[in-house]
Image (cartoon, rainbow, N blue to C red; front, side, top):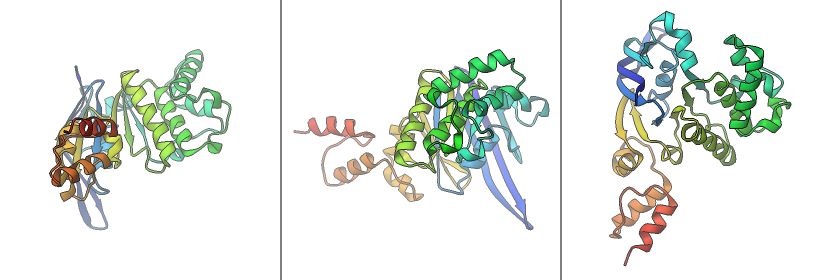
Length: 278
């Protein structure tokens, strides 16, 4: 595997009204090509600031960010970096620019100078990938929140990035919309081999990742596989975050003396563990 994303001692400070706020304080992360990584943390923990660095929307105040070996501070590489790493934001309305779905998905490839016949093929493939082909002639603004977000993702897919950074893409959606978007994200990662970096505050979304980074006050607080991170229930709760509901239930049962594994993440795992009890 090759490194898709590397940050080295990354710092970022916001300055305004005579004050300087340190949003990132020495962040080191690495993401392998084809990996699915989730980034968790409270509002203000620095996770969205980190996300914007991975697409060169922000540049470091200190340290380095490399996207597939390209330094984000090298202006000559900015265009290639944004072709390599696409960004999906929290509110899909901020990314939708056209009045017809297929025209919106075509917007990115057109700006890359892709030939029209190739754009047509890319648009059709992207809409098929997110299972929105039947809506190609619809107005995006008449779609549900989950459908809009899938169209926003299709617009990024049509640009053929190797990595997609999603900054809380389900935060404004209802449970049905969240499920639609998460299914799309998993499909892109598992079937298309696209590297996924998901910024989220939903623990049940993070359990699907290969690895998790937990951020606190602009620093990496924890890092590891979901089972290793979420079994540290008390450590996570110390910074005011939750764990998946099933993991919390398991934690409470263990405190009552019931011999369950500490790293249960899903209902299915809980059922199996309970059935094994004598």
